[in-house]
Image 1 (cartoon, rainbow, N blue to C red):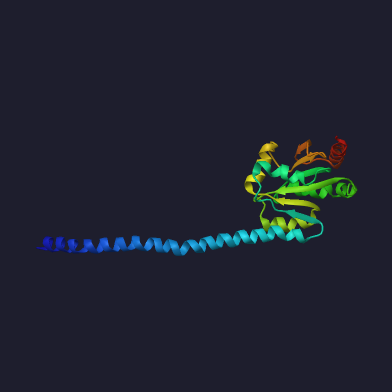
Image 2: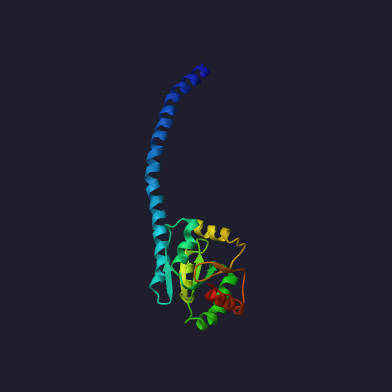
Length: 202
């Protein structure tokens, strides 16, 4: 008798279980719909915040910030160099967390002051491995043109110039031709010599 009652009870519960499972499946899309916009909104707000942080230095007299997010990685450096035709260009590839990069910035200040009346421009390239807020705080003390690249743009430049580490320094002549490359720190004397060569290169 007990066995019959137990079997009957289980049979009665089966439809209820099926109804509950179906109801759970029907609720699932609604839950996804309500949480997705919140996540999307959060991501959008973070991107907007990072963009504002990146653009803030553009309002400083000694710093020039350029955003080229829409440029293809393979075209990024040529697009940058086109802006400086007729001048020698020193490219400093760096990151906010790189100790030797920061030491190089301090070391090169006297050289930049010495060459301030020459046709040479110093540009600084970094990417998302450098937190935007930290980058924004640091570049106020680094005179020059700054580019905060996308991950793909930054990676492409490192690959193209076979950079196994940073800082990486590139010097281009007045026509945008590479005349010098150095991975790691470089003396001011050597850098000045290479800049002079780039200025004389015809």
